[in-house]
Length: 300
Length: 306
Figure 1: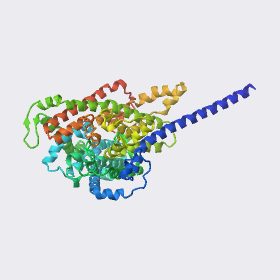
Figure 2: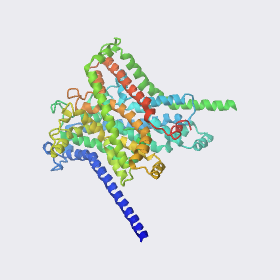
Figure 3: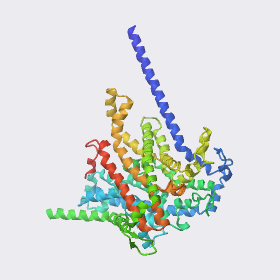
Figure 4: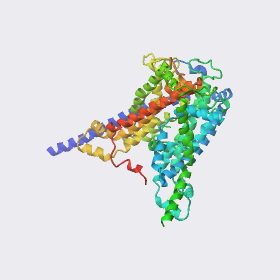
């Protein structure tokens, strides 16, 4: 009799534990879903807004769905502003940035991981130290230097830097190179392969995932960058998207009187189109985003 | 034999320097020379049109006498002292939730990270609309529950909190860093604590938090440097206003250099900004041993060669 009660007790306890676990899990999911809504809603709002008419945009309370869905917004926006020129400039800048960053950083990181030379640790600390210097610190002198070189209002200041190594990526690649076994390299050396040959034929193919991380983050940076173009570019035909779109907005404090400003539903459409490529890249290469952030703490 | 190994050594050195060449050139062009120029020009008056004129410490005296400098300094400090902790808190709490072995982790992680990839310009356009006091979604939602929303970007009190809200929205990268930090904590620690009868709160306080301090340290260090760089949001959304309430240090620097073309003055601000960031970083590094817990021998030795 007593034994039976005990097993029932045990059974009951297990059931209770399972129920408590269920409650806990559903609580967590409720919080997570609510949080997701907070994070996803502005996207939804951007999407909805870019298909609304200007009148519908200023309704209060705001409507959730645009009626009718105005696809015309996009062709109209292209007609009213040089969106496609901005896009072209952004693409040129991004491609040159990606190429430069991948080539230069992979080259520079190699001797830090694989070659012996005096002063290696000191120089590596210098690389790390430059990580801590924000661009804004060097903006004014760089402006003066580029001005002397006649580079103001050209695309050069927006991509040349990437060809001379970027500290976060050098750091990332060094870690990757160090994880490659030495045997591969030794075998190549015995076969008479040069250092450059080892780098190019053996090392580079093995660190492809790291190169993907670099390409993605450099793309993100050059696509989004606002501060550099603001300082170095003056004419509309040379502006990338980030700076170009800003010129279409009314300047704060002087609503709608800025020349060249376009109506806000077009602005939202332009912002949507600008964000789109990044979302696509993110969905196809999520793993590289996660890897890049966890390995270096890059915030994009 | 010795001679031969020496030639190999010198070959290796030569190769190393060749590989490094782009970095060496870049270091001089993009860091060393600019910092040298900024240091020198900080003591000159220079408006581009006229040749620089030596003025000694006058630029620095002028900066410290300008009330706008102090306003922008205190605004930047606001973003550091209020914005950074909130960002860390948001990133950490989401990471802790996601770390509780829930199903669909990958989906949640993607959703929470997504805002971080939105270009600042695009998100500024979007949030300009969200924060619009008349037609904006946020005030519509607030009025739905009977609250009269503030003017947000048009208010001296609410403009900075609005910026912080945007930054919290885009704090996904921080969340991923914490998530990685949490995954690095060995399960055995928790199992041992459970055997000793620790509850979840104790486990969090005694295991999770101490072992996460290196990650916390890293994110607060980079977060502070990042907070001092805030500019784009203010430039696009508020133009520094209303009444200079979103005038930040970098904005002040930008205006001096590229609106008023006071290059010497701007270089003086640059130097001051540099030393502020340096002081904050060094301070954080200095007090780190008081609260950051490093497990001896696990990290760190990887750092050395091979």
